[in-house]
Length: 266
Image (cartoon, rainbow, N blue to C red):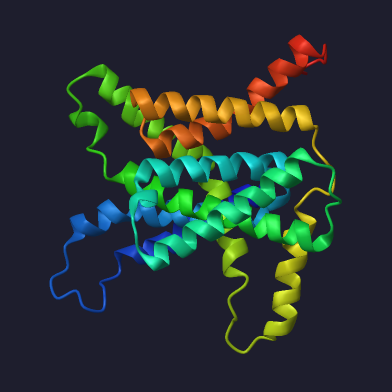
């Protein structure tokens, strides 16, 4: 509790720098700084929370999580229309995407030993996917009109759901940003040592345990069904549906184990 208070207090006081005039700001407009201050505070708070509480808010990555992320990325690229672009750079990225997705599927559906190199690859791959989803989600959510301007209750609930999902995933988004930025060299640091530490953190956060093949098949069935239906009926935007699937599939899996296998949920 003391550490949380320190993170909150530090984030609050650091966010007050937002009210300082910018380098190229000729006319100081206080209202503009007021509008951007909450975002400065939230950015600092989530970064501090992700750093000091990463062991408590982040669970180990598994083959199942990487599988779900990979399937979601396929849906994301198809729904965005990237597969219709005929450009060498996009085609190169898509080729890498499908190769890494196939790699994650093979690992989930077989009992290949999860060596350190495989865990490192799957961890970096998972982090890159989450980071891409995070950028798209943030852009899409904040491009929505204000919830107070919604004429209908359904529109307000829809916008509120998007902000709720963004809030729930904010800490994980920041933690994955920190993991990716750890590969960048720091000024005056020993990059070789920093790179080894970054690799070790990725390996350590990836579980060496194999998932049940039945759970992997259930993940494929659940995610492809939800994404397929959403692609046809457009129930939710792609970025919202992806985070919705991330949050609901673990509960669906627990319910399946309880009803079919007789395992207790709690």
